[in-house]
Amino acid sequence: MRSLRLFSFLFAALFALSVHAQLMPPAPAVAARAWLLMDHASNQALAGANADARIEPASLTKLMTAYIVFGAVKQGIVKPDQQIPASEKAWKAPGSRMFIEPNKPVSVNELIRGMIVQSGNDACIALAEAVAGSEAGFVQMMNHEAARLGLKHTHFMNATDLPDPQHYTTVADLAHLTSALIRDYPEFYPIYSMKEYRYNKITQPNRNRLLWLDPTVDGVKTGHTEAAGFCLVASAKRGSRRLLSVLVGADFDLLRAQESQKLLNFGFQAFDGVKLYDKGQTVAEPKVFKGAKGAVKAGFSDDFVISLPRGAADKIKVDLISVQPLLAPLQQGQRVATLRVSLNINGERKVWGEYPVVALEDVPVAGIVGRAWDSVRLFFQ
Image 1 (tube, rainbow, N blue to C red):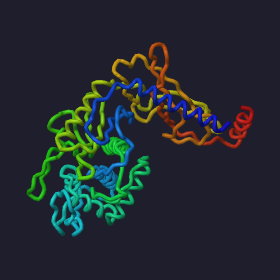
Image 2 (cartoon, helix red, strand yellow; image 1 turned 90 degrees about the horizontal axis):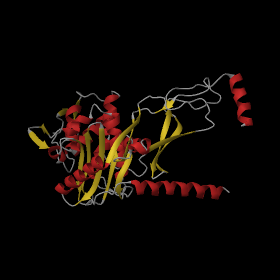
Image 3 (tube, rainbow, N blue to C red; image 1 turned 60 degrees about the vertical axis):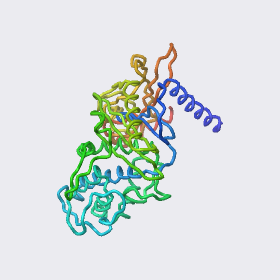
Image 4 (cartoon, rainbow, N blue to C red; image 1 turned 180 degrees about the vertical axis):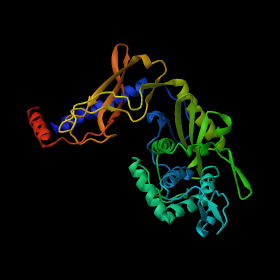
């Protein structure tokens, strides 16, 4: 019986995926080893190829380096104007550099710009040492944060871009990391749109060509090694919609920009962004057992916007599937239900996607009498 239920679950999941694929507009051909197009608001994959294949991240590693550094600044571990003495290890870092000098102090603000705009490996190591005491300690923080963010196919061995058999990720993980970076640290994100940065009397341009080619593109990061090929994580915002593209393994610099532009244009032209619920809007109030309240307000912690094939917005149908029995205590942000979005195609409802609905408030446990009464109710249910 258990194996039959498992088979039924897997069949339903595969059926939903196949239906989803049937409804998707056909993606363009992309000259890259692996790529993914994602809607930032919903983290919804719109198109992709080899999205979960293991890849060498090259300088896209610095997305996680930046994520950790931004968090350290926000927590006060380092301060933006704090002067950091460059170690010999940072000064001698191979690869791209911002050209810091040994024992010459440089501010955290300058290092952040050197890391992002100039892709300086020396800046990355100096920041890692300032935040964690050593690059090795910083790498532990990178891997801890990767696990917390759910990047299941990612592992780091350094804070820069040096190749290593155990230094790997996927384009899907990079897309989710980039989305988290934009969401969690909006005050730092505008640095990614800087077209050049000057330090130590040396001006270096941002290697992201799309910053010059498309005014809606405002980031994010390039990368290149012989093994990884030419890589680019790009983001564009048109109106209220933001899309992300991740592309690795292009044959040359211009090609990674052209193919990324193709992906972003496809996403904006083939899909509509549809806002279903506002941030904090009560979508439902599912029943709660053993709680100080008999129900909990449930909804979304951000505006809930999904991408649908152009012209399909009027075909949406939604169903709320509550987690039952729902037992107190509940914490704000805890998943309490699932929103199933379907499209009515030729009179037939086809599942488009399922999305978590969270508690909008805390629900503490009830007193002993309330808990006892609900135990009786649960027994008879």
